[in-house]
Length: 85
Image (tube, rainbow, N blue to C red; front, side, top):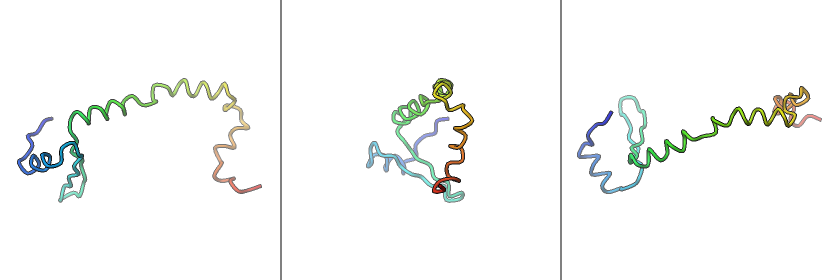
């Protein structure tokens, strides 16, 4: 959805070019960030290109390295056992 930029926001964008502007809905107190579209698309591409596509390979590699061994289950409880010896 594309909405026209109101004059008040156009003025703020014009005096702060390239900056992200935080907007707050006074009724819900929800904050939004107004970002130039070019920057948004660049950021979105980097988020979409995260490591999700490599999860399978990471898990397979971890299993080959021995992380599937039941002895390694202790790492699941690391915080519980930390400092106990």
